[in-house]
Structure formats: C-alpha cells, structure tokens
Image (cartoon, rainbow, N blue to C red; front, side, top):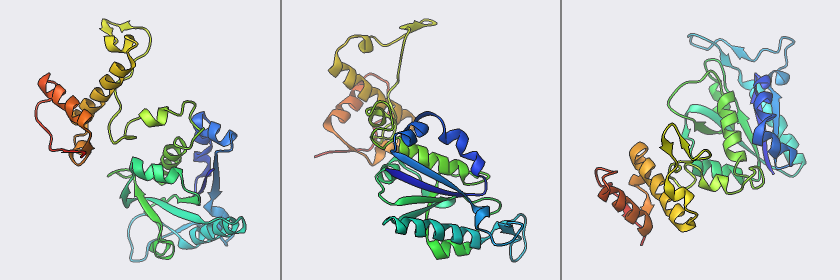
Length: 261
C-alpha cells in the first residue's frame, strides 16, 4: 500500500481531487491511503496562528516552524507505533526537478510519505535544518502554495501502484515511462473532417503497429523534447527507426546519440 500524510493549511483543497477517478479507486481498493492534516491543529495558542512577520523585515508572512515540527513529530510517532518509518517531502522551487524515475521510486516506497505544503512567503528555515526534507520542484515557476504540487506527487505515484489503473498496461505506454513522449492515439470514428486514422492502426498487424508506435514516439520526442534523447542509450531498433525518419525527411538533422552494445 502507498501511504501519504499531507500537512497543509488548506485541507479542503484535497477532497475534490482525492474523491474522484483513479485516486478514489485506489483508496477504495485499499491500495492507497491519503491522510490530510490541518497544520492549525498543531498550534498551541487559542487563535491557531501559523504564520508571522519575517525577521529582518520584508513583504508577506512566513510559516512558523513549531506547528510543522509538531505535525511531523505526531505523524512519526503514529508510524513508529505501527512499526513504520516516514519519508518527508517538501515541494519547493529549491528542489530537484520531479521526474518519472523519481515517481517510480516513490510508488514502491514502503515508508509513509509525508508531504509538507508551504504557503505565504515561505517556511521558517529551521524546518529545513531540523527535518532535512527531500525538496522537489515541479518546474521553474511560482505557485501560491504546495497543495497543487502535493496532489501532483500523489497522482503521479499512485497511478504506478499495481491495481490502481484499470488497465495495467496504461502506465507502461505513457509518456516518460520509457523516457520518450507517447505515440499518437486515435479512436472512432475512422475519419473526422477529412482526417483519417493511419491505415497501419486498422491493419490488425500487431508487430507493424508496435513499430509504428515506437517510431512515432521517437519522432515526437525528437521534435518536441530532443533533450530526452541526447543522453539516451538507444537500441539498434530505435536507431534504425530514427534513420528511417531521417530518410523520409520527417527529421532534419542527426542527433548525437549512443547505441546499446
């Protein structure tokens, strides 16, 4: 089972997502558990204050360290009572980029995963010093808080847990599962506004379809995300397909690439 404990100032943001689609299915099947904790419940004053002005001055407010440290301690204590350990994640622009290999590793995590959702102008630095959380970034942009990144982490990892998706092959074929973008997908009808489904997909020839899809995935990755191919160890089949694309004029310049020995 994949287990998440989310620490947030806005717990209401999670139910609309967690109670739908495959995240709900994963929880109903007992394959996924998500507990959302309100950080205000870990304050000690009657007004449940969770932020304060920054030392040294400046705009905005800073999240206080004490409620966060108390919340993590409570989750850790509960986990230890059940013979478990915890792993603390902190979505932040300072973190390492979120990648599919990282998500795949999370999906198999035996520990409870604690996600700290920051807000306001930031979090008291002593949280980092005391907890040394794993800092994860979704990209080079700024969000209002860590709630949306937390949901992205949960969604991305949960879909890789066996049994959560309706079709187990879905996660295998998707973009980035093999460090490539996904091939084009089509469904009925066979033609829309004069645009027909490629004949190969109607042929029933499974090996030819597999090669076509692989070729299209390579082409899409080359044109849209060439950085994914530059350091990739290509199979001889992939190299042949790329050469075919070059010969067909669908790609314009060779890419520096290595081939598997």
